[in-house]
Image 1 (cartoon, rainbow, N blue to C red):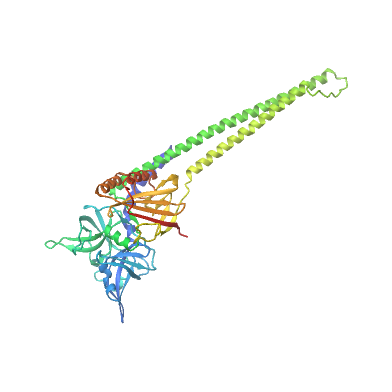
Image 2 (image 1 turned 90 degrees about the vertical axis):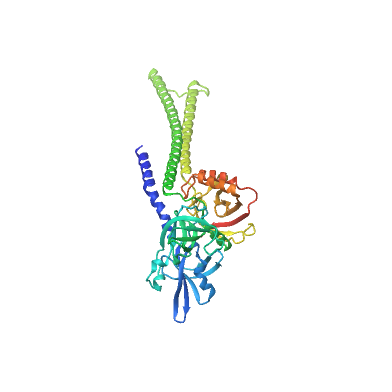
Length: 515
């Protein structure tokens, strides 16, 4: 009882103190994937810094930034592009592999340098009033610095605010879905990410505007749906999240409820194991007691037989002390001989019974121990770093889609964020995701035994999209690997009712663990 109480107190302390700390580190983690993007002019006198902006990692050696940041390098051969990571040795040359001035986005590829984590992109529809964080390298932070200072690794700047409004056009008049927000940005912030409070990308900072008659300034970001379309056309599969970003209070309550549920589940499993072990122990004790009694009876019968034989021999010798003893062979069916055979038969049967009873008792005890071990041990499936190759022949609608990689742990959690629910007794795993910007339902299915990863996309009309979002909001499924797979399965079943007709896209990857 004391140990159980201490465990509950430890869990309560974890919820009270660890959860707020974890909630504050998500944006900090995103900072490790922010880079400065610089344009270098090659002259006869050496390299000169022409301009700089910001960018963020979306995949291995891939960085997104604004098109206008790297536009000079597209126009003249003597201009080059490089990135400066937040840590490491400094300048890393980069190549522009996709450029879209219509969406104000560009994709860079680099080689070498530190291992920079890719940021997660949110597919949840943003709303006015939501909190946002802007990361990047604004020029106002570097007034009075030299060009060499701008080429030196340093952490990005952070500002915060709220979403003011959502618009369908950019300040330039182009039809680009945008977010107007109150986080302060300036020229050097261009290309940096706009994050929600959970550290997930909801936009790319592209402009900052001021009111004509007021001094109010706002940042304007290209929304995530435009970014996802751009990456899809470039063949990049980023890390996505369909989880709604909870407020600080909601996050604490959700984590507390999840911890309590986990403790209750653990207690129920422990009680079940103890009950099974107790039942097997009682059976074993009964069997061992029965075996002991059988052995006791056998010993008593043997003792009685020995005593009766000695007494009979003693009486015979006392009755004729002076007469010579004559050996007498009994007849085959003489009474004493029959008694001896009967006693020996009883003893043999008792011995066999004892051996069998003890063996059965020991076997049951071993079975009980093995059963508990089987319940406690969870065999890891499809774990570690996974690389997947797109099977274009077996896929439909695969234009612009490329190979991908992710990490898998447990049974089965992807990128330490998204828990899948088992299907067919664990033969396959599934997760249904509502894509806010694409207004679609993605059904993701993984088969660890053959390495197949399936993604089926079903478009949603307005009514289905609203109902699916309501189902996601009302579910108790959260981020991370410690959730309840049954809750994920329940949400999957609810969302699968919106997977009507044939999918608009069916993709199949062949995956295997990275050596």
